[in-house]
Image (tube, rainbow, N blue to C red):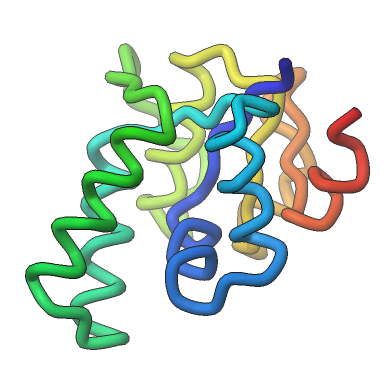
Length: 133
């Protein structure tokens, strides 16, 4: 089974807009992929849904529950300073590194420009879905 660290922007899109990001989450729900997540990613998803989309505490609690149920929680064992322009992106890399993810799935341009982190490819949701087999 392919494993992925899924960036907060993909989770936000999956919850709020659905589409391909939701398809990725549904793969994990069906045990066809494994998603790694960290407390930082969860907090960022909830922060964006609250501030940008004005989600209520009740709906945020449900999103929190779903992320923890669907994804494997990872506690990063190192601190990285790879992306200087957006230090929060380093938290995604830390999660992937600690989890040993096969790939990082994101819509973030700073991460996508890296192309990979070590031997871990950084891909879009569409690329992950196209190569999940």
